[in-house]
Length: 142
Image 1 (cartoon, rainbow, N blue to C red):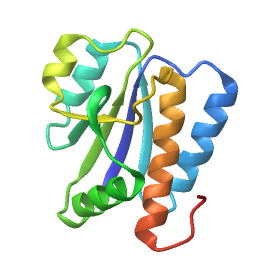
Image 2 (cartoon, rainbow, N blue to C red):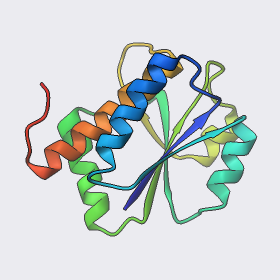
Image 3 (cartoon, one colour):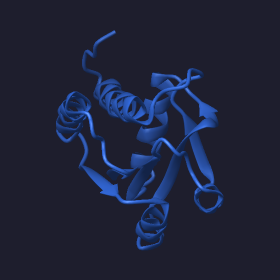
Image 4 (cartoon, rainbow, N blue to C red):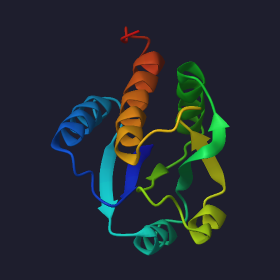
């Protein structure tokens, strides 16, 4: 299974980029992970349409909220079922247009709190690292 973080817009703050890069590199020890930044939602839709076999997940405040163990279990089940790719779609400060909300049926909330789009990207990268640490049975930061 491959993972992709499809980010609408750029992560502009260098300190946020550094933290995302750190967690992405950690995840890559367990699972191939690609970060793709696109200009806007239309470019994100084109990217999603180019790989229909991938499972797309929209990071959305109104999405399903799960804890770290449940995320790990879900990713492990997808991996074990042979899911080729999971694409996590991360928005920008403007949120998502309706066309993208309609295209991506699966929605996941990272927190009941409102997070900036850049912080949400950091949280996602950290939670993916944590999920694979849980799946490997290794220690992870608590």
